[in-house]
Amino acid sequence: TDAKKNTQKSDQQASGSTDSSLKTKITVASVEGNTLYIRNDISGVYSEGTCTLTLTKGSLIVKRLSEVQPLPQSTTCKGFDVPVSELSTGAWNIKLDVAIKDKTASAAGEVDV
Image 1: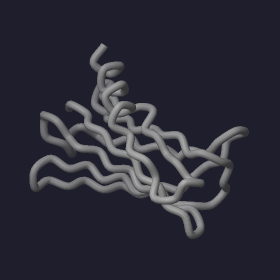
Image 2: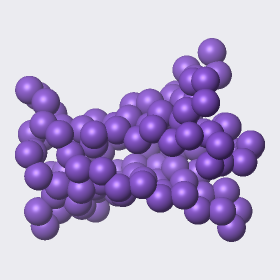
Image 3: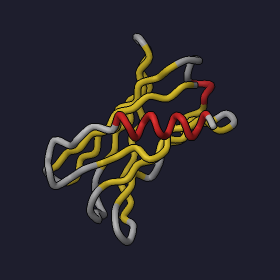
């Protein structure tokens, strides 16, 4: 239930994009076992682009980079699996930035570790 609650919280806090033709949404932000899983969905089908995940808690910052992967109807980042050993317990802010060609989009959320 915590994973579901965290995903819902992230969905509610998803922000709009900086370019109306490109949007991203965090679809999963949950801790399972010793791993924090972050997944998203990007509007449109793209074969090239980058994703930057930034997790912050106070002065602590954890960053991850990923390429995009096209699906039949949309695109996703290749996924972020962050070992919880790299994170302290508590609430972490999630910021996900997507850059495809000259377009960018962002989404934000929060997850409890």
